[in-house]
Every structure is written in C-alpha cells, then in structure tokens.
Image (cartoon, rainbow, N blue to C red; front, side, top):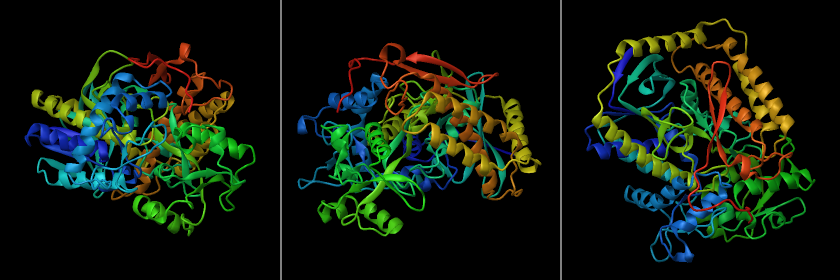
Length: 581
C-alpha cells in the first residue's frame, strides 16, 4: 500500500468540492499541494445535473428585493428550522459568488440591457435566480474544471473510491482509497480535508439523482464517530419525469408552466392560492400526492406509477428553446413527446437531503452535538448540514450554498494547512489503513451468501413505501425494523467479481454499506420527531410544534446502536409564524 502525502485533500468533485479546491489554491498563492479526490471522473459529479439556477440578490431594490427578503424567504421556506445566522451569511455572500462564476466563464442568460437575467423559483417572493438556460450546474462545473486544471497545485484523482476517514483524538489524519483503474489501495495523508461528496437520495428507488449520490462522505463521517444532523428531512422534488425519475426543473414552472390533474384543472389553487405552482417544494409535493390519493391522477401503464401533468403548451416556443432547451431534449428522448404540444407526466421524487454532517457556520465538522470542532476537517455542499435549509430547501439555494461554503472551507483549509504541520502518527495511521485493507479484502474473498443488489432493492422499497411525502407513525416504525434487519445482513454479502480492476460489484457493495447506515439514520431520526415540519409530514401529527420541536436532531453511532440528541435552532430575527402561501 502506497502512502501519498498532500497538504490538503478535497473529497468530492462537485461544485462545492471544486470551489473549495480552487479557493484553497488561490488563498495559498499556489503554495499548497492539493488533491481533489473523486470516485467518478470529476466532470461526472452530480452537480452537472443541476438545471434551474443559483439564487442571489444581484440588483437590490429591483422588484423591491433585498438580502433581508431573501433571508426571510429562506427561513420561512425552511419551516423555521434553518439557523438564521447561517442564512444571513448565505444571502450576503451569494451575489459575490454569482459574479465570481461570471468571471471564470459561466454564460449567464442576460436581459435586453445586458444584465444577468433572474427567473422566479418556488417560495421566493420575487425573481432572484440567475441561470444559464436549464444547464446551470453543467456550465458552473465546466468553468470550475477549466480553472482547477490550469493550476499546477491541484492534482485531480479521478475514479478513486474512498472507503475510510481516519481520525485520531478529534484530528484528521488521512483517507484510505482504492484506485479503481488499478485496484491498488492508497493511503492519502494530509494536514487537512474537506468532505464535499453530495447527498444520499439514492436510498430511495424513485429519485432524480444520479447513481453516484450515495452519501459516501456522510457515511464515512458517521463511521468515524462524527455526528449527523437533521437526517429525517429529505426533499421530494414535485416534478420528476415518469417513469424514469429524471428531473424536470422547477424553472419550467418559473417560466409559467402549470400543474394539472386528470380533469385538466390547475389544482394548486386549492393548496397555495397566492403562489400556485411556485409554492415551496414540500407543499407542491404533498398537493400532487393528495390529488393522486383523491383519484385525480393518472397511471403509467408500464411502471404502475401514478402521476399528474406538467403543462407547458401555452408557453411561447422561444421560451422553451432559449430557457428550457434541455427539458425539450429530455422529454423528446425519453418519451418522444414535444413539451410545447403535449403534457409531461410528473410525480414527486427524492431529490435533496437537507440533513448531513453536523458543521458549524464556518463548515468545520463538529465532534459532538455541541462543543468543539474536529481539527483539520471541514464539510461543504449537500453533504454538510450548516443548516441553511432546515426542514425544506428553496429551489436554487443549493447552488448558492455550494458556492458560498465552497469558498469558506477552501480558504479555511488553506489557512489551517499553512499554520499546522502534518501529524507524525505514521505507524498508527498505517495500522488503521491496514485494518481497512483487511475489511475490503474480506469483502472480495469472503464466502457470504447475501446478494447486495437484493438488499439494495429491499432498502429502496422500504424507503419509498414508508418515508415518502406522507409518513405515518406505524410506517416509520416498520421502516426502522426492516432497515435494521437489512443492515444486519451486510456482513454476509457476496461480491461476485473477485478482481481488482474497475470492480463495480465491490463499489456497489461499499455504496450499499454507506446507504444502509444513512437510511437507518433517516428512519430513526424521523420516527422520533412527533410533528410535521417541512419535508417531514406525519399524518398523526399534522401540525408544527415549535414549543417541543424547534430543534435539530443529532444522531451518532454508538456501541449499542445510534445515539440521538437535540440542539436548539439559532433564531436571530424571524420568530416562527404560520407558514402560508
């Protein structure tokens, strides 16, 4: 096993990870040796799938907009579970990041006066979402990749699967990784690390996310004994294409699209009269499932999935061609329909995970529910729970979060690496890496009888059935029981491919291990929260309870099972009020 030394490691190559690597390089003046570690080719990270845009108040006063209004919309959209000091930092910083991405080459759409165009998004009082057609994530990723590959201080390790985060007494030491192209084990050693591996929506079967969205960094932190926060809050995007689950961007509704039921009625008037199709995602998702439950949906013949329709037929064809070209391409390729002439079948799908690694406002990973942060370890992007999204994220705030905290942790890791020397714990570090190597070899050489793909399918069925848009007490309790039973079978899984080079069976088995731990954390956190808030809606407890539950859930791995505790939400300006749209 080779030991490779770096000054800093960035685990994850989406917008948050690449932004962190770039700003670490810029902050250090090129004096650091930085590795950007990705289990895929870096440009295949899930951030390329972000479609609609990035939020920020670029022109204060326009449409009576302000940073304070953006913050209020975000806090209200979060169902008051967001930490308000973090939200204020997000909205203050976002405009600068949008302009930074302009400087590195993102081709933002522009209005007739040459200013960056802004479109309407759900839960936002006014249009404040900058966009590059409906391929915003791709254009941001392309600009970042061009930048980081031009800097000699950043080395990109494509297709390196990290399976262990090595910590000692609250200090980061290194990562154990497998070079998928050679099968060779590596020990990556550095003074500091940023985790930026994205979310874990692939615990569900029907999801908008890519197959790589398996929450690896969150699971690594959990296995290392670090706390996770607000894991019960999973966002379901209202408009995923049926039957594939491919995202139909919220921008389609922002540009004027309608949601209609089997009777042809725009039903959002019955659920959010003032916002209609631009209500927050949790409200629209519940509205769609309610319409289906009332018999006003349609059924897809092959998949059996129920759905409603997204109607773009009344839009000017130039709007679709100039602002929604990928939606035209997706619907044409997947269903052979023209969105300018035909209805688009959609239903809610798992999309974004508000919960993740517990961090402070600077992105430093916490060692417990409260107290001190780990030394040399940060997290950013969807894998980190700062928390700016609370119980429900507003569309287009995710790319803002990735850009803002990507810079924060990138600059933070550069300053830390400049002040600290590498820990001289090589013997202990190597011993821990050898133990992980033994675990991986055991998976490859073991004679287990469990099919990992059958366990994966059962996990996703449980999550889709019991932890979807509407939840029940009995369903969540059953999910906990079923998921724990599935997790107990993990040690007997059989990896059929015994080879070392590009072993996708091994990768899938490791991802299953990660996903099942996170699925259990979701279910165990959810069953304890006896209220409805944002994306967590419990039929037996349909109201929000600020007196008992204005708290973040913190879950940690313990010797006898998970330990759950609670910490208060940080409220600065906006007291909780009834959430009406």
